[in-house]
View 1: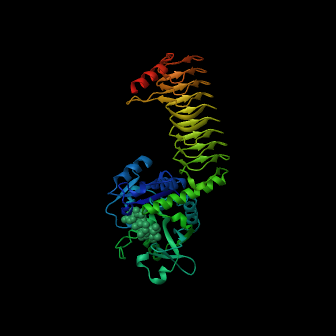
View 2: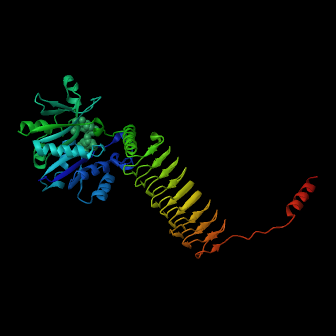
View 3: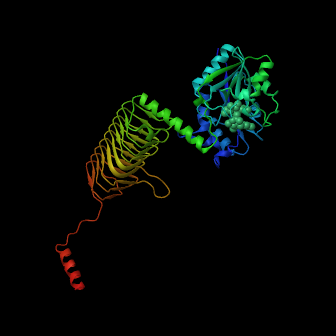
Length: 448
Ligand code: UD1
Ligand code: CA
């Protein structure tokens, strides 16, 4: 039988090198806060309790966690006295929990759930403590795994406390640790702060476990899993690493990226096969694109569902709540928000569509504007199937245009238009024969 699982996420560091008013762990990578990546990984491995340890200096972290995980999921570590001290801060929130705990980090978003799963699995077989390590290209700064001849993990030594020969070790500590909850808190109570930084090191539990008769094992992962963010440059590097993976995954799933390096994905972008994405396209969160669609160059898309065979752009902006049916065509300089387009509906140029429902095969002429906002409230516009909205029509919501109806170019439509009707709402054209000629002659004479 599987043991119950919990996760403790450490996020009480100051993050001073970010030089930011926003707490470090709330900075986004791939459109999602780093902390949320870690929380998602904890949930993906079935952690029934997730406790985030935050510092007293960053109330925004507590508020965020409350929103994402609900009350009782935050533990405050004040003042922060080291990683072991941080884990102990979560003890009260996990009172009564009996099972396995994994310790994760709010500033290390890329530990794959499969890797955590493998740690739990190894623990199920071998028992004891499982530490996640990796072979570092440059081990400076990391804790080193000191492994005995038989492959067991003897202890972890922090870079600052290591001898030269220990510093030569390249097998490093990711920080991720998996252990039985009761054993872990029992060992943590024995950790002292006699080291170069005067901190309570979580890493010391390994040596203490050994001398208390508990087994300790290493699971070796990839260096990329352990990637942590301490500065804006590392944030950019993490973003780059995520984007590189997302591009490779998209192409692997049958998506054509003409210039992969210029396309930016979010953590949850879903793209079906045989979609083509031209250069310079940005995806914010919550986008899905069905088979065969084409996203032309220079589009900004977030919170949008794009139907099969649809064509979007170049230079289109799709904002949250956009739903495009199959084979819809959206052209250049069209902005859409909180609106649906039925199958084969079109808006080819220079248009704003907000809070609207556009019927199948309807055509919005160049310069159509839905006037959805009066400075206080928003109102909906409904356009029927096969309707034809003349160029430069302003639709003052709330308003409905019926099926197959037309609006005259340049109209300001303030009243509903019945099915099959034409609505024209503009000044009538006046023609004064010969006026221009007479005007020019008069002006010319005056200059003589
Ligand atoms: C830690 C590990 C090191 C490992 C490295 C991986 C220890 C003693 N060392 O070192 O072996 O190679 O991570 O990146 O654990 N934190 C708190 N409260 C505290 C101190 C830290 O919540 O009192 C949090 C930080 O926000 C951070 C994480 O714990 O997310 C790691 O702390 P940090 O001080 O960065 O540890 P390192 O020195 O990098
Ligand atoms: Ca660190």
